[in-house]
Amino acid sequence: MEDVCKCDVTIPDGHRYLEGRLEVPGHARALIIFAHGSGSSRFSPRNTLVAQKLRPAGFGTLLFDMVTAVEDRDPARRSDIGMMAERLQTVSRWVVHQPATKHLPTGYYGSSTGAAVAVAAAVVTRQPYAIVSRGGRLDLIGDILPKLESPIQLIAGEKDPETLALNRSAYKQIQTVKRLSLIRDASHLFEEPGCLDKVAQLAIEWFTRYLPHHE
Image (cartoon, rainbow, N blue to C red):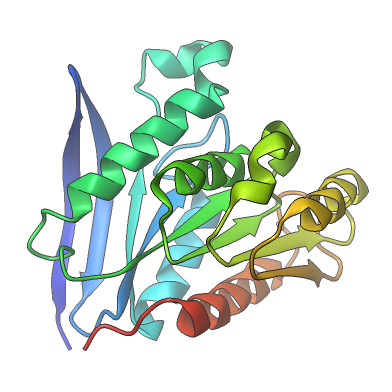
C-alpha cells in the first residue's frame, strides 16, 4: 500500500519552527514520535534505522529537531530536558491536526536523554499510549518516574554498565506497566552488528501490544 505521507514538515512552536520528517504508510495503525539524544537531530542514523524498521510493521514515524540550529551550539539548551519536553508536547498536539496523522494513536521512542524528554512530556500530558526507551538517561528525571502512566519498555546494552545500572534503578521507581530488556553485546550507541535490529524488533512488539489499533 502506498504511503499516505512522506514529507519534510515545519512545526510551529511560538516564534520558532521545528524541522521534521514525517512518513506514514497507508496501512499505519499508529504514529511513533522520536525524541533523539543530546547532540543529535532528525537525521540521527540510529533513529532513522529504527524508523525504517517500524514503518513496514504498520507504524508512521516522525523525527524532528528538538532544538534549532542556533540552540544546538549551546550545550545548556540542547540538554534542557524541560524545554525539549514542552516542544515534544507541542509536536504531539500538532500531529492531532494533520490529515495524515490526526486519526492515529501515538507512541514515543526516546534515545539517551531523549528518553527522559519523552517521559517528562508523557507525565504532563498523560500521553502517549506507550513509550520505548533506548539507552535512556532516566536518572535525569528520577523524581517524576513514579508519576508515569504510559506503559514503558527500557532497552539497555549489556556492554554499557553505567546506563544499564541507571535503567535498573529507574525500573524500580516506575509504577506503571514496564519491561527492562537487555541487548547482548550492545554498547551505549548500539553500533554493534544486529543490535539496532533487535532494538527495532522489541519496539515493534511493545508498540503492537500497547498502542490501540486504528482500523
